[in-house]
Length: 216
Image 1 (tube, rainbow, N blue to C red):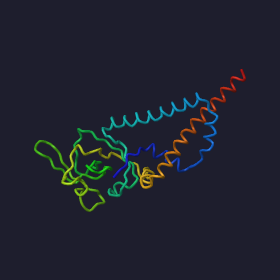
Image 2: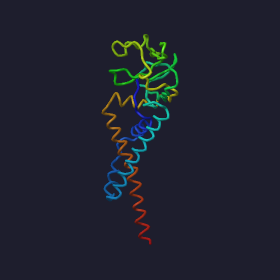
Image 3: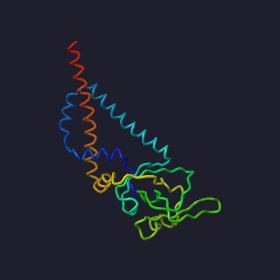
Image 4: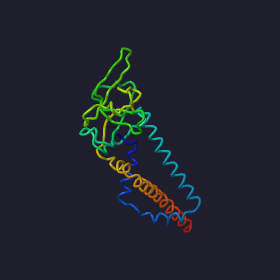
């Protein structure tokens, strides 16, 4: 199984773990800000969020996958992939699915998609492809994981095909999935720190402007 947590979020969460609750000085900066600076801060934050969404949408277009970067949550693909590995996916419709290829697929009734290897392919006379998958670390194929009565997967079930990976960088995502309260705390801490950086910059800029005005 995998999570759609982006690597940028993973990096920010790691940073938050390293230096957790030091946000008191940020609130002091906030109290010193005027309304115009607060407005600019909110605008900057909205631009950051919009830019992140645009980058993600761009990756979706380039890779052809609805989830171009994912985190492995289980050990069913060991030793090929370990828990916490970050996978890079593509999903070009013109590329044929081959035996031995590692795919991420959705199953009806399951919230979290699965990343497993293609075990068998069944091609019909009209060219339609059906295939069977299996985890490298599992003793049986995935028919027990498919929807009731489903024996094969189809091309429409595929989210993407694994093209590369970075080991263990997604372990923070696994921790957050196992402990949801911890995720909320980290997300709050990350937002506070991002805001602190912006507030500090704007406050110092304001002080510099006032100092320059007094000199003239």
